Image 1 (cartoon, rainbow, N blue to C red):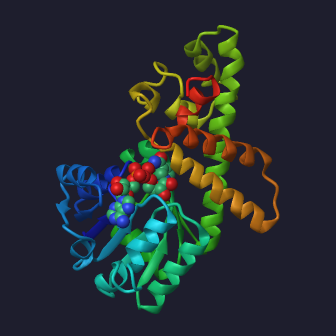
Image 2: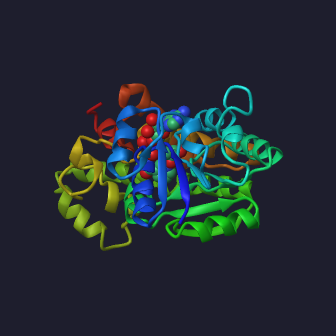
Image 3: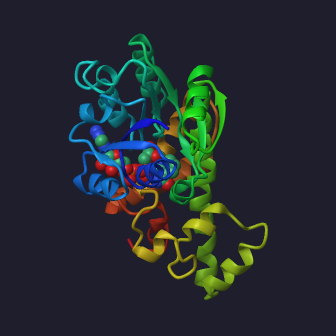
Length: 298
Ligand code: NAD
């Protein structure tokens, strides 16, 4: 079992660290949000009073943060060596599980490597339900040695496959775009005519969920309250997966599409829609709140 520093105990980080504690690891948590940190402590983590305090004696450091700017700040600090890089022991394995831009991922990994650390890039797919169930898919980039260390030392990392860091990033963003944002907004748009025709949303779901219309998003994050019990729509759209993070992921996917000269018109449409959702003040709501925007509630 390992001594793990876990940085970022939000909607994903909290269930992930809970599983690591359940598997017998010693977890020391840090989050800038006192509420998030308190929940981590309630889940059985040791409370770190600072980033340095969290990582000083760690064998593995896991970060689960919103965006590239947070990851950059946490690893590099102000001057390049007063973040995790600098404070964590050189033998520690560093693993960033956040979904971030390629440029930041490359910069942080290069600085870690120059400073003598083994670092892997391990963004996830599976949502908060997958995080709670310990069934996330991790898309691991980095050295084969780093991958081996991660899979051996932590039994709850989920399904993994090794690939280069950049391919993992691009692949993950592509997947987010198509399996998350696109499907979410296409699925939600698809509900609107039926709603306008007065069809009962539950009956429609019963048909779609057992036919070729079935999607992961509708099964886990159905946007209409009262249909899928655990969906964010049943708790006033508390996330879940924040709309601001969906807008970020779709933006990253659009950048990757532009960089590679590929055309992703459905992704562009979804990106514009989620940006609008955020502009309407709903960035902190679950991304399924896009339903409210589309039928005029926001
Ligand atoms: P979240 O906003 O719920 O949690 C992020 C946590 O990081 C917050 O508690 C925040 O206080 C903390 N944080 C921010 N800056 C920090 C810092 N400098 N030091 C310490 N803590 C800091 O986000 P989330 O939903 O848990 O998502 C985390 C990452 O996982 C994102 O990159 C997201 O795109 C990705 N992701 C999320 C889901 C999902 O369903 N929520 C699914 C797949 C991937």
